[in-house]
Image (cartoon, rainbow, N blue to C red):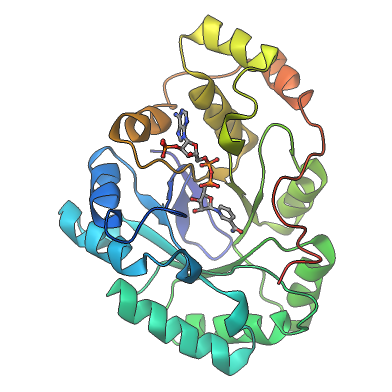
Length: 270
Ligand SMILES: NC(=O)c1ccc[n+]([C@@H]2O[C@H](COP(=O)([O-])OP(=O)(O)OC[C@H]3O[C@@H](n4cnc5c(N)ncnc54)[C@H](OP(=O)(O)O)[C@@H]3O)[C@@H](O)[C@H]2O)c1
């Protein structure tokens, strides 16, 4: 597994398991199976309703806790300094462990609270209750505001990113600021599996369209968190470190960008 350096001195796997929409009761087995297949990053969130299963799966895996990187997120209804601290305590209780990375799930600009929420995350890190802190779905002005007001740069911005929505400008800003880009909905539900560029790379490399797309994320320098509840696809999705896209193939992938956001607009959501 390749790991990426974070701006606080810690590191994060380049590929992990997303567990949105995985039912709480099956989450322990999915997480333990993924860890058994080599995954070392599990991306959870309070709103996914399966933090207890996440923690149980990590324990069930038998792999030492300090070898696994656990992420969770503060949901929109817990924005604000004190509410975020309480939400963190509740997440830790459900997980049965401290997460490695805590993210603000959405900026929710209409609430006007993400700066206060960010200050709570800084306090949790200063108190040694979480190793790394970051954000999700933040836009450039919001990133610059939290950094400008607090002097603390998020280690990660987890954003919607897939071949038809490539976010080149935001990725370039992340690079300038020292923020790791983490790609959510990286497979966009298979929307680009049939694209000629993906099919051509698949035929040339002998890898599946999903593997081609996940490898593309890794070569962009992103951390990527595909979800699967299926053991065969879990194994397939992590098997992307023994081949590479050529420069020409990366250019062909870049040409698939359609600026097509599939999820909510972060300026309006929450
Ligand atoms: N921060 C945010 O706001 C935010 C928003 C959305 C998602 N996320 C995170 O990002 C993670 C990934 O995003 P996502 O869950 O929306 O979608 P995704 O990972 O892009 O796609 C998941 C879908 O693709 C299928 N799939 C997985 N591997 C496959 C393969 N090799 N071949 C064919 N189909 C495959 C899965 O089905 P099977 O299960 O049947 O394999 C599932 O239906 C989430 O789980 C969550 O952790 C974060």
